Length: 222
Image 1 (cartoon, rainbow, N blue to C red):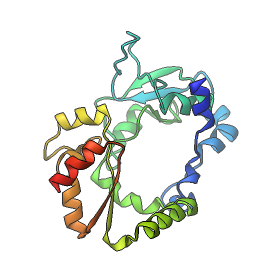
Image 2 (tube, rainbow, N blue to C red):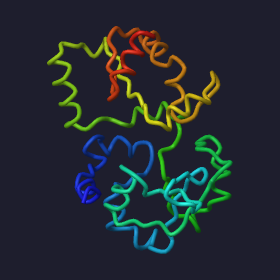
Image 3 (cartoon, one colour):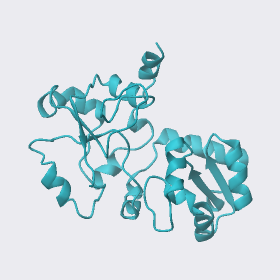
């Protein structure tokens, strides 16, 4: 019952972001449109594979798998579109590399893998930063932000907003992080917030986080 409720609450991408600006960067199609109009032909059942770097640990199963539908939001998201995977593909030692894609094209040609469905989001890379300009919030989100700023009398010119990930996977990432690290959210382990605030000369921090203890720790560091 809980998963059914979560499935009903799936929020489409265009609720948060405008679609047209992204089309200035690459060809895109919304997930719902793809599943309705193209999936049966391009990505039919029986040939739906999910990609992950390596097999994931699952205490309830000894099967070597991406376990792509374990937990929330993963399970409810794929189930919402009636997707069950037919196999797992472990892509190590490849990484998400937009500069040198030949490794991916050679190992996973589109003739055999027309869709690359990943069990998790791509890692952070400095080359991806300029792409952010194509992600423009929807009118709905912009209105919410303006109302928040007006309510708290905050000027956008003095605000630095930070979405801080603090789940167990990112805690582990910090364990292995170094000054040269650039994976997952390792940047947040390396005084990223302070550097960014100093870089942009902002006087107000907005933390997108649900852990008060971490907010206090970050504030003391800043």
